[in-house]
Amino acid sequence: MINKLVLKSREECKYDMLSLGEVMLRMDPGEGRIRTARSFRVWEGGGEYNVARALHKCFDMKTGIMTAIADNEVGLLIKDLIEQGGVCTDLIAWKETDGVGKKCRNGINFTERGFGIRGALSCSDRANTAISQATIEDFDFEYIFGTLGVRWFHTGGIMAALSPESQKLVIEACKIAKKYGTIVSYDLNYRASLWDLAGGIDECVKVNREIAKYADVVIGSEEDYVACLGYEVEGADEGFKELNVDAFKKMLTQVATDFPNIKILANMLHTVRTASINDWKVLCLADGDICMSREYEGLEVLDRVGIGDSFAAGFVYGLMTSEDPELAVNYGAAHGALAMTTPGDTSMARLSEVEAIMNAAGARVKR
Image (cartoon, rainbow, N blue to C red):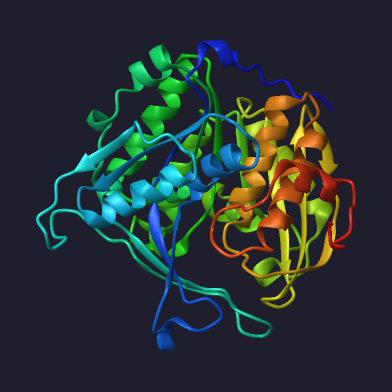
Protein backbone atom coordinates (compact mmCIF):
# COMPACT_ATOMS: atom_id res chain seq x y z
CA MET A 1 0.00 0.00 0.00
CA ILE A 2 1.48 3.33 -1.13
CA ASN A 3 0.41 6.92 -0.61
CA LYS A 4 0.39 8.32 -4.15
CA LEU A 5 -0.43 11.90 -3.20
CA VAL A 6 2.03 14.43 -4.63
CA LEU A 7 2.29 17.55 -2.46
CA LYS A 8 3.69 20.95 -3.32
CA SER A 9 6.82 21.94 -1.41
CA ARG A 10 6.63 23.93 1.83
CA GLU A 11 8.90 26.59 0.36
CA GLU A 12 6.42 27.56 -2.36
CA CYS A 13 3.34 27.75 -0.11
CA LYS A 14 2.20 30.06 2.67
CA TYR A 15 -0.05 27.36 4.09
CA ASP A 16 0.67 23.71 4.76
CA MET A 17 -3.08 23.33 5.12
CA LEU A 18 -6.08 25.60 4.65
CA SER A 19 -9.68 24.88 5.71
CA LEU A 20 -12.99 26.31 4.49
CA GLY A 21 -15.91 26.18 6.92
CA GLU A 22 -17.95 27.78 9.67
CA VAL A 23 -16.52 28.61 13.09
CA MET A 24 -19.10 28.80 15.88
CA LEU A 25 -19.06 29.41 19.59
CA ARG A 26 -19.65 26.26 21.62
CA MET A 27 -21.40 26.86 24.92
CA ASP A 28 -20.41 24.03 27.26
CA PRO A 29 -22.26 23.49 30.58
CA GLY A 30 -19.47 21.18 31.79
CA GLU A 31 -20.79 18.17 33.67
CA GLY A 32 -24.32 19.58 33.84
CA ARG A 33 -27.22 19.98 31.45
CA ILE A 34 -28.01 22.80 29.05
CA ARG A 35 -31.50 23.13 30.51
CA THR A 36 -30.26 23.70 34.08
CA ALA A 37 -27.01 25.61 33.43
CA ARG A 38 -26.18 28.87 35.17
CA SER A 39 -22.85 29.29 33.44
CA PHE A 40 -21.17 28.03 30.27
CA ARG A 41 -17.56 27.61 29.23
CA VAL A 42 -16.88 29.01 25.76
CA TRP A 43 -14.94 27.18 23.04
CA GLU A 44 -14.58 27.85 19.36
CA GLY A 45 -15.31 24.99 17.00
CA GLY A 46 -16.37 23.86 13.56
CA GLY A 47 -15.92 20.64 11.61
CA GLU A 48 -13.48 22.07 9.08
CA TYR A 49 -11.77 24.56 11.41
CA ASN A 50 -11.05 21.90 14.05
CA VAL A 51 -8.80 20.09 11.58
CA ALA A 52 -6.75 23.21 10.85
CA ARG A 53 -6.39 23.99 14.56
CA ALA A 54 -5.22 20.48 15.45
CA LEU A 55 -2.76 20.38 12.57
CA HIS A 56 -1.15 23.49 14.00
CA LYS A 57 -1.38 22.89 17.75
CA CYS A 58 -0.57 19.18 17.77
CA PHE A 59 1.33 18.65 14.51
CA ASP A 60 3.11 22.03 14.16
CA MET A 61 1.91 22.89 10.66
CA LYS A 62 1.16 26.31 9.18
CA THR A 63 -2.61 26.42 8.83
CA GLY A 64 -5.34 28.93 8.04
CA ILE A 65 -9.12 29.19 7.94
CA MET A 66 -11.34 30.62 5.21
CA THR A 67 -14.60 31.65 6.81
CA ALA A 68 -16.96 34.61 7.24
CA ILE A 69 -17.75 36.21 10.59
CA ALA A 70 -20.31 38.83 11.55
CA ASP A 71 -18.47 42.03 12.44
CA ASN A 72 -19.48 42.54 16.07
CA GLU A 73 -18.16 41.78 19.55
CA VAL A 74 -19.07 38.09 19.31
CA GLY A 75 -17.24 37.91 16.00
CA LEU A 76 -14.17 39.46 17.60
CA LEU A 77 -14.35 36.84 20.36
CA ILE A 78 -14.38 34.08 17.74
CA LYS A 79 -11.37 35.66 16.00
CA ASP A 80 -9.50 35.90 19.30
CA LEU A 81 -10.16 32.22 20.05
CA ILE A 82 -8.97 31.24 16.57
CA GLU A 83 -5.79 33.24 17.09
CA GLN A 84 -5.22 31.51 20.42
CA GLY A 85 -5.33 28.26 18.43
CA GLY A 86 -2.56 29.53 16.17
CA VAL A 87 -4.64 29.38 12.98
CA CYS A 88 -4.10 32.24 10.51
CA THR A 89 -7.06 34.64 10.34
CA ASP A 90 -5.95 36.59 7.25
CA LEU A 91 -8.64 35.00 5.07
CA ILE A 92 -11.67 35.80 7.25
CA ALA A 93 -14.39 37.74 5.40
CA TRP A 94 -16.07 40.20 7.78
CA LYS A 95 -19.78 40.72 7.23
CA GLU A 96 -21.66 43.88 8.18
CA THR A 97 -24.31 43.47 10.86
CA ASP A 98 -27.46 45.39 11.78
CA GLY A 99 -27.15 44.99 15.54
CA VAL A 100 -29.97 42.47 15.93
CA GLY A 101 -28.93 39.54 13.70
CA LYS A 102 -31.43 39.92 10.86
CA LYS A 103 -28.73 40.85 8.36
CA CYS A 104 -26.29 38.18 9.56
CA ARG A 105 -25.01 36.71 12.80
CA ASN A 106 -22.49 34.33 14.31
CA GLY A 107 -23.46 30.74 15.03
CA ILE A 108 -23.76 29.30 18.53
CA ASN A 109 -23.80 25.63 19.46
CA PHE A 110 -24.90 24.50 22.94
CA THR A 111 -23.46 21.03 23.63
CA GLU A 112 -23.61 18.83 26.71
CA ARG A 113 -21.25 15.88 26.91
CA GLY A 114 -23.47 13.05 28.10
CA PHE A 115 -22.49 10.33 30.55
CA GLY A 116 -23.29 6.64 30.78
CA ILE A 117 -26.85 5.98 29.63
CA ARG A 118 -27.43 9.71 28.93
CA GLY A 119 -26.17 10.54 25.46
CA ALA A 120 -24.49 13.76 24.38
CA LEU A 121 -26.92 16.49 23.31
CA SER A 122 -26.42 19.39 20.92
CA CYS A 123 -28.70 22.39 20.40
CA SER A 124 -27.57 24.64 17.57
CA ASP A 125 -28.52 28.26 16.96
CA ARG A 126 -26.93 28.90 13.57
CA ALA A 127 -29.50 30.20 11.07
CA ASN A 128 -28.59 33.23 8.95
CA THR A 129 -24.90 33.10 9.86
CA ALA A 130 -22.26 35.12 8.05
CA ILE A 131 -20.59 32.13 6.40
CA SER A 132 -23.90 30.76 5.09
CA GLN A 133 -24.27 34.03 3.17
CA ALA A 134 -20.69 34.15 1.87
CA THR A 135 -20.25 34.01 -1.90
CA ILE A 136 -17.43 33.28 -4.29
CA GLU A 137 -16.78 37.03 -4.49
CA ASP A 138 -15.75 37.06 -0.80
CA PHE A 139 -12.61 34.98 -1.46
CA ASP A 140 -10.01 35.39 -4.22
CA PHE A 141 -9.31 31.72 -4.84
CA GLU A 142 -6.94 32.43 -7.72
CA TYR A 143 -4.78 34.53 -5.42
CA ILE A 144 -5.07 32.15 -2.47
CA PHE A 145 -4.17 28.97 -4.32
CA GLY A 146 -2.19 30.46 -7.21
CA THR A 147 -0.12 33.16 -5.47
CA LEU A 148 -0.06 32.47 -1.72
CA GLY A 149 0.13 28.73 -2.24
CA VAL A 150 -1.59 25.93 -0.32
CA ARG A 151 -0.26 22.39 0.01
CA TRP A 152 -3.46 20.82 1.34
CA PHE A 153 -7.04 22.13 1.24
CA HIS A 154 -9.73 20.70 3.53
CA THR A 155 -13.47 21.26 3.64
CA GLY A 156 -16.55 19.23 4.43
CA GLY A 157 -20.21 18.39 4.29
CA ILE A 158 -21.20 20.71 7.13
CA MET A 159 -20.02 23.71 5.12
CA ALA A 160 -21.76 22.37 2.01
CA ALA A 161 -25.07 21.98 3.85
CA LEU A 162 -25.32 25.56 5.12
CA SER A 163 -26.87 27.14 2.01
CA PRO A 164 -26.94 27.00 -1.82
CA GLU A 165 -24.22 29.69 -1.80
CA SER A 166 -22.09 27.54 0.50
CA GLN A 167 -22.36 24.64 -1.95
CA LYS A 168 -21.16 26.84 -4.80
CA LEU A 169 -18.33 28.13 -2.62
CA VAL A 170 -17.11 24.64 -1.74
CA ILE A 171 -17.21 23.42 -5.33
CA GLU A 172 -15.39 26.50 -6.69
CA ALA A 173 -12.72 26.32 -3.99
CA CYS A 174 -12.10 22.65 -4.77
CA LYS A 175 -11.86 23.36 -8.50
CA ILE A 176 -9.33 26.16 -8.11
CA ALA A 177 -7.32 24.20 -5.54
CA LYS A 178 -7.02 21.32 -8.01
CA LYS A 179 -6.07 23.74 -10.78
CA TYR A 180 -2.98 24.77 -8.78
CA GLY A 181 -1.94 21.28 -7.67
CA THR A 182 -3.26 21.48 -4.09
CA ILE A 183 -4.36 18.21 -2.50
CA VAL A 184 -8.08 18.30 -1.61
CA SER A 185 -9.64 16.39 1.28
CA TYR A 186 -13.35 16.26 2.00
CA ASP A 187 -15.02 15.08 5.19
CA LEU A 188 -18.59 14.01 4.37
CA ASN A 189 -19.71 14.82 7.95
CA TYR A 190 -23.46 14.29 7.45
CA ARG A 191 -25.80 16.40 9.57
CA ALA A 192 -29.45 15.49 9.08
CA SER A 193 -30.68 18.71 10.71
CA LEU A 194 -28.83 20.82 8.16
CA TRP A 195 -29.68 18.78 5.07
CA ASP A 196 -33.36 18.59 6.03
CA LEU A 197 -33.41 22.37 5.55
CA ALA A 198 -31.20 22.25 2.45
CA GLY A 199 -33.32 20.05 0.19
CA GLY A 200 -33.37 16.72 1.98
CA ILE A 201 -31.48 13.50 1.37
CA ASP A 202 -31.74 13.61 -2.43
CA GLU A 203 -30.13 17.04 -2.55
CA CYS A 204 -27.53 15.86 -0.05
CA VAL A 205 -26.48 13.01 -2.34
CA LYS A 206 -26.52 15.21 -5.44
CA VAL A 207 -24.32 17.92 -3.92
CA ASN A 208 -21.87 15.58 -2.22
CA ARG A 209 -21.37 13.44 -5.31
CA GLU A 210 -20.54 16.60 -7.26
CA ILE A 211 -17.99 17.71 -4.65
CA ALA A 212 -16.48 14.21 -4.53
CA LYS A 213 -15.40 14.62 -8.17
CA TYR A 214 -12.69 17.03 -7.01
CA ALA A 215 -11.44 15.24 -3.90
CA ASP A 216 -8.18 13.34 -3.53
CA VAL A 217 -9.03 12.11 -0.03
CA VAL A 218 -12.51 11.41 1.38
CA ILE A 219 -13.26 10.80 5.06
CA GLY A 220 -16.49 9.64 6.65
CA SER A 221 -18.33 7.29 8.93
CA GLU A 222 -20.55 4.47 7.72
CA GLU A 223 -23.58 6.76 7.97
CA ASP A 224 -21.80 9.48 6.00
CA TYR A 225 -21.12 7.27 2.99
CA VAL A 226 -24.72 6.05 2.95
CA ALA A 227 -26.42 9.43 3.45
CA CYS A 228 -24.05 11.68 1.50
CA LEU A 229 -23.03 9.49 -1.43
CA GLY A 230 -26.00 7.13 -1.66
CA TYR A 231 -24.19 3.84 -1.02
CA GLU A 232 -25.50 0.83 0.84
CA VAL A 233 -23.70 -1.37 3.35
CA GLU A 234 -24.78 -4.97 3.03
CA GLY A 235 -25.97 -6.55 6.25
CA ALA A 236 -25.80 -3.36 8.31
CA ASP A 237 -28.51 -3.11 10.94
CA GLU A 238 -30.38 0.03 11.91
CA GLY A 239 -27.98 2.57 13.32
CA PHE A 240 -24.96 0.41 12.33
CA LYS A 241 -24.84 -1.13 15.80
CA GLU A 242 -23.33 -4.29 14.29
CA LEU A 243 -20.43 -3.36 12.00
CA ASN A 244 -19.65 -5.77 9.17
CA VAL A 245 -16.08 -4.88 8.25
CA ASP A 246 -16.11 -6.88 5.01
CA ALA A 247 -19.21 -4.97 3.88
CA PHE A 248 -17.48 -1.67 4.51
CA LYS A 249 -14.45 -2.82 2.54
CA LYS A 250 -16.73 -3.64 -0.37
CA MET A 251 -18.43 -0.24 -0.13
CA LEU A 252 -15.12 1.66 -0.13
CA THR A 253 -13.98 -0.27 -3.18
CA GLN A 254 -17.19 0.74 -4.98
CA VAL A 255 -16.66 4.40 -4.07
CA ALA A 256 -13.12 4.28 -5.46
CA THR A 257 -14.42 2.70 -8.67
CA ASP A 258 -17.12 5.34 -9.13
CA PHE A 259 -14.73 8.22 -8.36
CA PRO A 260 -11.31 7.36 -9.83
CA ASN A 261 -10.00 10.80 -8.82
CA ILE A 262 -10.20 9.77 -5.14
CA LYS A 263 -6.87 8.25 -4.17
CA ILE A 264 -7.51 7.50 -0.50
CA LEU A 265 -10.70 6.77 1.47
CA ALA A 266 -11.14 6.47 5.21
CA ASN A 267 -14.15 4.94 6.97
CA MET A 268 -14.45 5.61 10.71
CA LEU A 269 -16.11 2.75 12.61
CA HIS A 270 -17.46 4.09 15.88
CA THR A 271 -19.58 1.95 18.18
CA VAL A 272 -21.22 3.83 21.06
CA ARG A 273 -21.78 1.34 23.90
CA THR A 274 -22.71 4.20 26.24
CA ALA A 275 -21.92 7.92 26.20
CA SER A 276 -18.88 7.06 28.33
CA ILE A 277 -17.65 3.86 26.64
CA ASN A 278 -17.01 3.66 22.89
CA ASP A 279 -15.25 1.28 20.51
CA TRP A 280 -13.21 3.01 17.82
CA LYS A 281 -11.24 2.01 14.72
CA VAL A 282 -10.79 3.18 11.14
CA LEU A 283 -10.58 1.47 7.74
CA CYS A 284 -8.50 2.97 4.95
CA LEU A 285 -8.48 2.17 1.23
CA ALA A 286 -5.44 3.29 -0.77
CA ASP A 287 -4.10 2.04 -4.09
CA GLY A 288 -6.66 -0.77 -4.05
CA ASP A 289 -5.53 -2.13 -0.69
CA ILE A 290 -7.36 -2.06 2.65
CA CYS A 291 -5.79 -1.53 6.03
CA MET A 292 -7.23 -0.99 9.50
CA SER A 293 -6.01 1.07 12.40
CA ARG A 294 -5.37 -0.29 15.84
CA GLU A 295 -8.70 -1.09 17.52
CA TYR A 296 -9.58 0.91 20.63
CA GLU A 297 -12.12 -1.23 22.48
CA GLY A 298 -13.91 0.07 25.55
CA LEU A 299 -12.43 3.55 25.12
CA GLU A 300 -13.41 5.78 28.04
CA VAL A 301 -14.90 9.06 26.85
CA LEU A 302 -14.99 12.49 28.46
CA ASP A 303 -16.23 14.42 25.41
CA ARG A 304 -16.74 12.73 22.06
CA VAL A 305 -17.51 15.88 20.07
CA GLY A 306 -14.84 16.45 17.42
CA ILE A 307 -13.48 12.89 17.29
CA GLY A 308 -13.90 12.77 13.50
CA ASP A 309 -12.16 16.11 13.04
CA SER A 310 -9.29 14.97 15.26
CA PHE A 311 -9.02 11.77 13.23
CA ALA A 312 -8.91 13.83 10.05
CA ALA A 313 -6.09 16.01 11.41
CA GLY A 314 -3.92 13.05 12.37
CA PHE A 315 -4.72 11.27 9.12
CA VAL A 316 -3.81 14.32 7.03
CA TYR A 317 -0.58 14.73 9.00
CA GLY A 318 0.34 11.11 8.37
CA LEU A 319 -0.39 11.40 4.65
CA MET A 320 1.60 14.63 4.38
CA THR A 321 4.66 13.27 6.13
CA SER A 322 4.86 9.65 5.00
CA GLU A 323 4.15 7.40 2.05
CA ASP A 324 2.38 4.89 4.28
CA PRO A 325 -1.46 5.12 4.54
CA GLU A 326 -1.45 2.51 7.30
CA LEU A 327 0.79 4.75 9.41
CA ALA A 328 -1.44 7.72 8.55
CA VAL A 329 -4.65 5.96 9.60
CA ASN A 330 -3.03 5.06 12.91
CA TYR A 331 -1.98 8.68 13.50
CA GLY A 332 -5.60 9.64 12.91
CA ALA A 333 -7.12 6.95 15.08
CA ALA A 334 -4.77 7.65 17.99
CA HIS A 335 -5.34 11.41 17.78
CA GLY A 336 -9.12 10.87 17.64
CA ALA A 337 -8.97 8.58 20.68
CA LEU A 338 -6.99 11.18 22.64
CA ALA A 339 -9.43 13.95 21.66
CA MET A 340 -12.22 12.06 23.42
CA THR A 341 -10.34 12.34 26.72
CA THR A 342 -10.48 16.17 26.90
CA PRO A 343 -13.34 18.71 26.83
CA GLY A 344 -14.20 20.92 23.86
CA ASP A 345 -14.36 20.38 20.11
CA THR A 346 -10.64 20.73 19.52
CA SER A 347 -7.62 18.58 20.30
CA MET A 348 -5.42 19.21 23.34
CA ALA A 349 -2.90 16.51 22.42
CA ARG A 350 0.80 16.75 21.61
CA LEU A 351 2.50 14.80 18.83
CA SER A 352 4.56 12.87 21.37
CA GLU A 353 1.35 11.77 23.13
CA VAL A 354 -0.20 10.64 19.84
CA GLU A 355 2.86 8.58 18.98
CA ALA A 356 2.96 7.09 22.47
CA ILE A 357 -0.65 5.92 22.07
CA MET A 358 0.21 4.49 18.65
CA ASN A 359 2.93 2.51 20.37
CA ALA A 360 0.44 1.29 23.01
CA ALA A 361 1.74 3.36 25.91
CA GLY A 362 -0.34 3.14 29.06
CA ALA A 363 -1.94 5.88 31.15
CA ARG A 364 0.49 5.83 34.06
CA VAL A 365 1.47 9.14 35.62
CA LYS A 366 4.42 10.71 33.82
CA ARG A 367 6.88 12.26 36.30
